[in-house]
Image 1 (tube, rainbow, N blue to C red):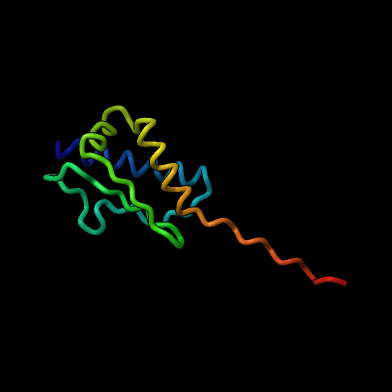
Image 2 (spheres, rainbow, N blue to C red; image 1 turned 180 degrees about the horizontal axis):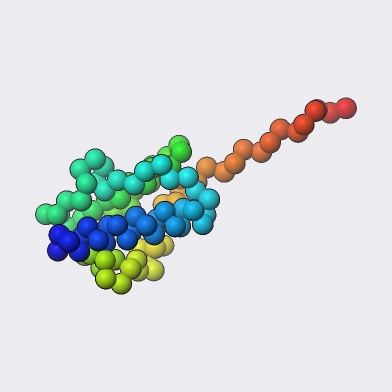
Length: 102
């Protein structure tokens, strides 16, 4: 299970980065269980997705992470990533008009 957990986590991280790029969401870092990393003896793994101003958390079971190593990210897990990325998305500020009112 250790190797499956690691491979699944890598595939999940890749998928989150792909989704972020497609959605134009800046992701500064991805961390499993904060600074602890993957917990081999735990049933729950939490992925912290750090954006420019906010951090989102996605809680997954270790089984969900392991399943990603074989078949990729399932649609239900992918939906959790979409929701998390939407929550940390910072819209671009509108540009002030050039020159000013004349």
